[in-house]
Amino acid sequence: MPSNLTEPAGRTGPGWWRSAVVYQVYPRSFADGNGDGVGDLRGIRDRLDHLEWLGVDVLWISPVYPSPMADNGYDVSDYHDVDPTYGTLAELDALIAELHERGMKLVMDLVANHTSDEHPWFVDSTMSPESPKRDWYWWREEPNNWGSFFSGPAWTYSEGRAAYYLHLFRKQPDLNWENPEVRQAVYEVMRWWLDRGVDGFRMDVVNLISKDPELPEAPVLPGQRYGNMRGSVIDGPRVHEFLAEMHREVFDRYDRDLLLVGETGETTVEEGRKYTDPARRELDMVLHYEHVEIDHGTFKWDVRPFDLGRLRDRFAAWQEGLADVGWNSLYWDNHDQPRVVSRYGNDGRWRTESAKLLATVLHLQRGTPFVYQGDEIGMTNFPFASIDEFDDVEAVNYYHEAIAAGHDHEDVMRSLRAMSRDNGRTPMQWDASPGAGFTTGKPWLAVNPNHTEINVAAQREDPDSVLSHYRRLIRLRHEDPVVVDGDFSLLAESHPQLFAFRRRHESGQLTVLANFSGTEADLGELVEECRGELVVGSGRGPVMAPWESRVYRR
Ligand code: ISL
Image 1 (cartoon, rainbow, N blue to C red):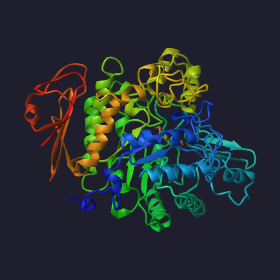
Image 2: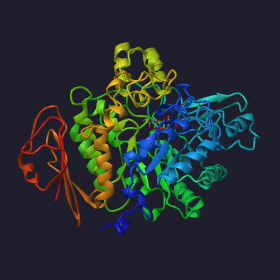
Image 3: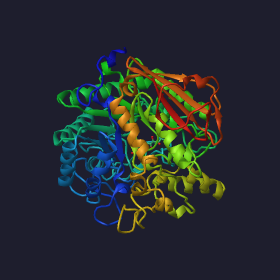
Image 4: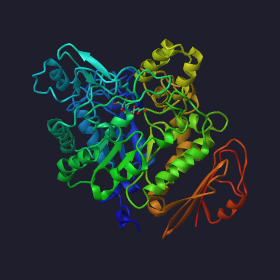
């Protein structure tokens, strides 16, 4: 048995998160408790029954800190408070207490690669070259050629400093982690929240915190205006050192069951092993991007058809790569992704079947599953018709940049419709009422018209619904040690339609069979696997129906 798995995963104690399921709430879009059209903490507290009924163990909320909302709260202007849009600090304390009473934990989103340009640290830094916080950000007299993640240059000129500052994201200057004062300030923020009772952090773009201090010019890809800075900022030279220091300065001081998840876009399996190796004491798990970039070309707006072979290959690489050391997170959707049913499944005739299949293949891999609000009812992409319907800074910037560069309007709209982050941000669909049960007011982003059919109320009592399926999978993880600790092996590695794998453990084995297509699939030799108790699905026999999934236990 791998060294980090010598003990079975319990609901508490070392490695407790191995048998846990995390639920992500995007507060703006989850539930509006005061009728102003924007979700809030009151709304989340009113919906805790849903989370408990579903069986989730951990709630992760996207940022609720004071913010000018240039990036819906990921641009933080005060780390020690709650934005009035979402409520008050007292309400957050109440949320923590209510979750704990129900046996659930709260994980906060910690955005520490950058701050808002309205954060007092940055305002101070811009004042003059003598400011106490002059080195808290990256300042240069001459910018390099880097582009930002959200279109445009990564540098902006400041009159006060008569210099340029680096911002990999628009209006969000990058903190200079080379400066020990910056690191200590971040650790202080973390301890402040842990002292308040939160149970851990999801650390936003944490693999960008260490930059190559030379900030070298970056290669310019064909058709691009700015240099691609990824090679100088992703998994940078001191990132592991900084995380180990964070562990010592923060987490080692707490004798509680915490969860440390890093968002590590575009990282590799090799780096993922380092981040999550328990012996290195950095993070518990990372959110990598490899399986959500299957349909990207050179960049995300260059949309490619879904490729099952590529998906299977990337999942298997992470499963195998982190088998003896480290731990995987498992997710399809979050507030930055379009809806997986529309993307890798079928959001028309086979919506229910494909949503269940996607849930099954994800939840039964080895790792900790993350359910993003709405996944559990099979929410779909939004039928965007005009650019005015988009809210997200990334989508809007891209639109203007692409149109200015002479791209065809319809082509740009097609990319946005498929890939925009707003697809994942439309309000949670609780019921069939005009505000979908999300709000009694005018929602900040339009409710998907399909909420009249796809909603929690319609699925809750239906044992065949996507919602009941999620609940069953979560229960299976809590009850069956094979799901948590069994090893993973891919079956039928090159089947054109099937994603099949086996999980093996001393207590038994599970075989997962999934037909990722709208046509019947012949199991061929895999029919040998169809033995034992059918724990998920209903089909039998050597042919799988379109988008059918089955799980056998022996
Ligand atoms: O790397 C990217 C594209 O190749 C970006 O997608 C980037 O990694 C991603 O946007 C990071 O997301 C996180 O930080 C952003 C914020 O807008 C997202 O909502 C958040 O999840 C900046 O804080």
